[in-house]
Amino acid sequence: MTDPLFSAISESAPWWRVRPGTSLTVEGGAPLAGTYRISGAKNAVLPLMVATLLSPRPVTLNNVPASLDVAVLAALLRRLGATLDWREDVSGLSLTVTAAAIHAERIERDLVTRMRASVLLLGALLARSGEADLPLPGGDAIGLRGIDYHVSGLRAMGADITLSHGTVRARAAAGLKGADIRLPGPSVGATENLMLAAVGASGTTTIRNAAQEPEITDLAHCLTAMGATISGIGSDTLVIAGGRSLEGAVHRVMPDRIEFGTLAAAAAITGGELTLLPGVTGLGDATGLLGAADPVFRQAGIDLRPVAGGVVAGRADAGLAGVDIVTQPFPGFPTDLQAPAMALLAIAEGAGSITETIFEHRFRHVDELRKMGANITVRGRTALVRGVPRLAGAHVEGSDVRAAAALLIAGLGAAGTTVLGGLDHLDRGYDRIAEKLSAVGARIRRTEE
Ligand code: EPU
Image 1 (cartoon, rainbow, N blue to C red):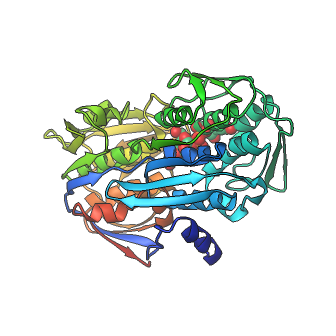
Image 2 (cartoon, rainbow, N blue to C red):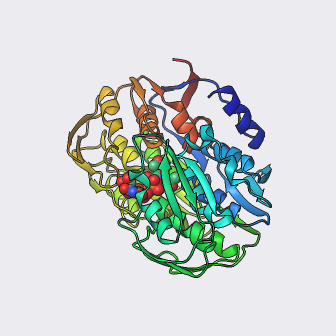
């Protein structure tokens, strides 16, 4: 991380520590055991933080995960003129954002391009101040194609949007107007962006073919607490009555269902047992978090036993078994658990398959798992995984947050030493995962290799 970037982040998120090392060295073979607290959801907290810009009053988010993405977005909010107040106690990290005045022109390229979720600033800034100049997150490879649903939805609401020199220029001088929008596909980010814009638009906005992920429901609940009127929450049609000024609110970020699934797979892969506590109450509430992954994981030999406030996860007596998985938008099997599930299938009895239908290029962990001895063949969008008795440690590289997590949990179960590069990706999306895993028996060190 470059120095100016680090100072912007550390001033805005004082809890953020640059952790040493560029890789993790993992000694495999130790069964995980103990209690693991599941953090607030990465994919919920980012849109929630952007939502705080819609009100001039303080909005408090509890259960905020201490991840690099959160620190980067905090730095962006501060540059835009918001005041941030952090609290940390035994129940975790809380953030109060007061966006009394917003300077939309102060968006910082270095910060925006580090994080795809910064595209959500388009909707929120248009709603709040009628303008946004946003450098494209990620550069040419993404281009306008990856945000075309966002752009055409905002245009339908009256925004004037052009692209030049890698920056999206959006203006709504007379304010946004409610519209009836049908998304071409149920995009999570586009649904969130249009919700953020719609609460600040005049009139009613209907978003059809909306994504239904729980993180969207979490955003809708926070916006409602801030005074927005939204109906159809949790369905594929959201109706948002705009034009009201929003108030302050206190909201608890939902637990991270992907961290939960990743750790359940880790417990089973290592033949250990973890009590996963996502901070929900009531017997059975925690298993519900896995959604469509719950029956699939059980079929693959993960034992999931509900206990008060959580789940005990381990390997079923019958052992791990190959299953066929197809990723789908919610309520289907989540694409974000596809890579961790592949680490599990790699050592399961028999063959299984994973078909990825959401992202075209989300099999980059396959070659890395192969280096560890996995038997995986890819045909088009399907990976056929023939289980082997055990993987062997290797030098591998995590190319995105979930690929890195998959390689990490594969390494925990493998024979010998795995050196995992791409640590930045892990730190981006998981709250102190190496440290939390060490506390439940994983043999992990941060190293320079
Ligand atoms: N798409 C378009 N045009 C658009 C928007 C989306 O073609 O304007 C396509 C995408 O290229 C993709 C598909 O639609 O093929 C779905 O993309 P979506 O917009 O739903 O994804 P996202 O909002 O960019 C979020 C999560 C991802 C998660 C997906 C799917 C955040 C910050 N990111 O991304 O999380 O995989 O939804 O559930 O919420 C991760 O956590 O590792 C991660 C990548």
